[in-house]
Length: 416
Image 1 (cartoon, rainbow, N blue to C red):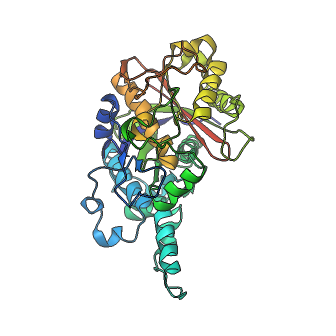
Image 2 (cartoon, rainbow, N blue to C red; image 1 turned 180 degrees about the vertical axis):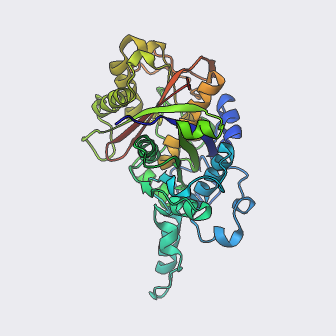
Image 3 (cartoon, one colour; image 1 turned 135 degrees about the vertical axis):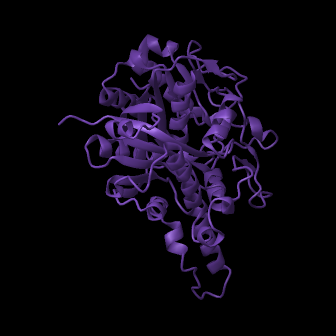
């Protein structure tokens, strides 16, 4: 069976450094930090008092207030990003065969704030179970693609992938295969997360996973820097419209890039720590290259998982050197988490958008906040430090890894 070609025809982004794909891209190129003191709740007793929250975002600018109240933030974010991507793709919803349009979404946690608030409300009462009737449908992780499909009438495959921080990359790979195999013509894919909450921040602090650089939060996310002390939690959503190539060409769609392959693997090592030798990461990048039918030397740019954790950054770069050999020194490597923070289940989506726009615009966004060389990192690797670099990017890779040892990798190239 000959696999169908898959292209990207629409993008949508809602991030801590920009509320549209264009604002997001401008923020990336400008080296903008999204980290700032938390505004959602009183942080006095928390170890970490900052995060990468959305800025100047009012959901009722996009969704009717009554409808918005039925959704957790993560689902609201999904709706906004998906709507932007659908509009960007210029899909004619009156002409497209909605039976062949799917929504495959990623979320690592789902409706955490809804769950947190409902339980706190119950615990503060007299024991009578007075729960909001929308508690369950607001909380469940699969409700985001459900809401997207309901709004637009998309009747193809509809589900959520949950693989921690690899969730949206997992969703994109599933969407790629759905179109490749002829099951769908179009898939709305991506991911969303809204974990900047009491429970989210408290839980990650308890694991010692977050940076505690409270005095200078804007510089706290510092991948590859010797003084990094943990990741910075972010929130938001990213959406991509994937489309079968001939279908896109027939309607005269703008094509951003071709989605040529993906890979999955497991570390099979530890609940939260990466394998120190990066064996799962090596495997996922090799799987991705094989799936795409490319050689290591074909890759120009890699947006790393690069969370700014002491163990993870080193293990990933070692794996890149192992897979790409001497060619690793010729690749523009970066971590956009230095600007956006870590969006958990939405990370893969917004980082895929970054590499696609890097190809389209011929420039790679920087890894900001780097001041101190880490002697454990190969100094010959080009980590695109502190300033964007012009580069003709023909092939770009994006890595995302999650607690539980989940690894996902996606690969895009300029359209022929």
